[in-house]
Image (cartoon, rainbow, N blue to C red; front, side, top):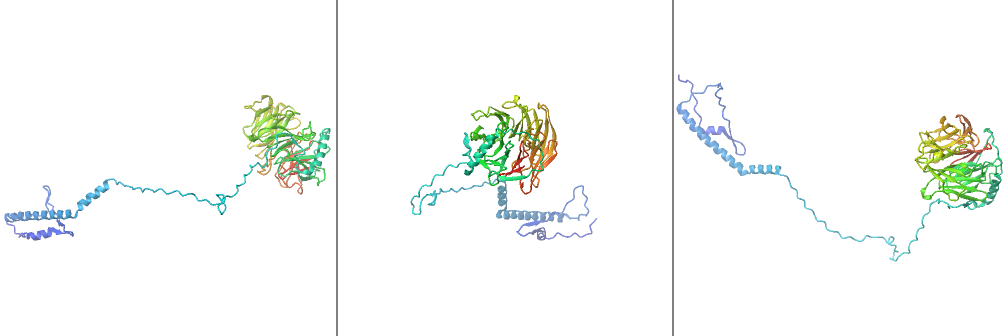
Length: 514
């Protein structure tokens, strides 16, 4: 069957080349893709035109020429790109990325600078403006402490007077003290506080750390010890123009003063200067009874008598020393460690002298037996714990059936104690403001010297006052006078035979209610 369709003849070869090999910018020719020829299993959707044998032979020749021209164009393009060096640049960039960079630092050599001599002024060179040498400076004196420790030996009372015009007052005081040794005073049960009136006078220069009252029933002598070792004696009933008689037996705070009942013509005092002295008015001397080396810096807090010639002394480092007042060695017979921290007070049982009580900053009040004491490692009979450190602890003065302590946790505690100290129980706790602060001496609650059921303590209340309590916690009386008592009395003491209360503040003033 003859195909009626007329087949289009092939276009000339140049037209085919222009159509398939159109050049892009840069001279590169791009050939069109050949039409897709179906595979053996694919079915063509269009019919192939009929081509004669002549036409097929001419088409194969044209195709061969086309391939040659195309290959020539590809070769020319490769030569063109090779002339641009693109491949070499690409390879160099690839190598630069893959190879690690090595940095070479060139250190500059520093040149040594010439050291020039340091310039100094003429003043530093000790030269005047003309270049002449100035005279040498004076050698400074070795500085001495402001309050050095006094002589280790006895001190003469007259030479230790603070004021030069007090020798006459000193002689009168000596006469009274010697005569008081023959005074047979009797204990009075008079506790009527309502009629007592206040008076005051400045006894010492600085803050008071202790007060005492002489146990005479014929004359009221109040004594105070201040911050820098002065001890003032005030005849309370004398004219106000007559100033107190003041001695200087210590160099640091006098923390405790005592007139012993068995020998009232003597006054004992211990100080933070690590000395214990006895003022003997018969000999007119302040004798040194006990001391420790000054470099130990061991503060003496208080003492209590075991017998007329032996006492217990509490030391700041936690020791209790047994001191015999008759020896001249100024050393303790025995030393017992009773507190891991700092000791604040010691008190001996008034009847059974084998027992004593201590208060320390280890938050404990402890009862001890003298017969069981060792240098270290002794266990107390009783431990009375506190939330904050107690300031002091004392046996009651007549029978020792009570223990009184005052602590920094704003409490005053009263304990009952058996005669053998086998049982100690707290019977009363009084809430009391004991926060005196840094500049006031800490409160110490003290017993009436001859009564079992009354004690006295300073107060932070306004108007200022001194309070009297019973052992059952009742407030018995408040000693106050808005015109006279205008400051806090941290330390107090009551007369053993007369209705006389003595208090001291932090300005050197002594207040007396009588």
